[in-house]
Image 1 (cartoon, one colour):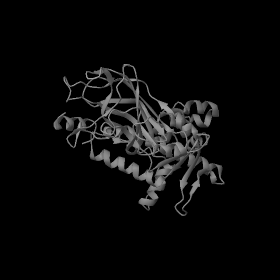
Image 2 (cartoon, rainbow, N blue to C red; image 1 turned 90 degrees about the vertical axis):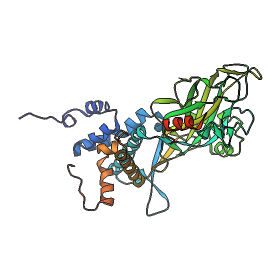
Image 3 (cartoon, one colour; image 1 turned 180 degrees about the vertical axis):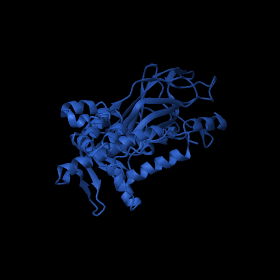
Image 4 (spheres, one colour; image 1 turned 30 degrees about the horizontal axis):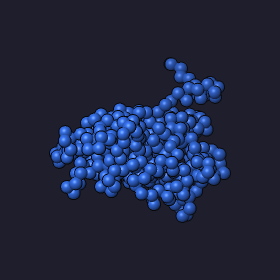
Length: 379
């Protein structure tokens, strides 16, 4: 008979860790913790789920504490409040494994993550050409042109910025879609695109700054009130009237819930005043808001944050993804379909929803607008 050797049992801890750390997929880490009681203990005690999570998403390195809602009391309970170190490590493993799963699931999501428009670095003819218009997925609204326009500038390299609040303080972003505006009412129907775009994600510097944002006029810049924890590469923008997709190389976790779009350079001069403008018809941010399952509270002045985890909602989210993927054969299977949920998580939901079940094996025209809206999943 062929002899099988368990390297976790036979090798030194440092060597086994070096092997395990080469796992770069959330599913692999969860599966590794499901091989045996020994492997589960190894994965949990060495915090492999946390290491993978923080290694892939540096923004999460600032998690200083994890809390959960206590169903028996109105207050939340600290995950680290248990007397047993093993219980603390198990719960931490569950939270980070769940967070990794949610992030992986975002790859098959087409949710629009924008909550509302915050501000633009400049606005021409406010409020008719306000940033708010970029939330309307049409070139016309109530028989009027719908777009945001910058002020004119003699320098074609002058940048502009747009800032949006996302639907949750913790979101996973996979791509940003933008449509430059075609001025169909001007001779030649010029398109006022930018030369290139770049995206930043982050949070307000303080609670006071966030409160001030609600009072600020949207046509005034607010860039100095934020800390940006992620900056994307620069993407070229084409001078075409269409939704342009800017897909991020990997899903990005936004801690704090704010997006800044940097519009870099101008390509179209207006004949009337001989100045360069940038005009955007519509913006859409694609990804997965995690607010119902994971919430964050940024701490001042350290800029670290507390992560709140709701495992009951997490189970519902996994079920929702599973149902969606079964209904639409064009959607790639999510991790939940591959049964990679950590056994502790599975046990919790099976016991609550399926009593008696045992987990075995453990130890410009409307038509054009409609087509473009369908292209980015709006219709």
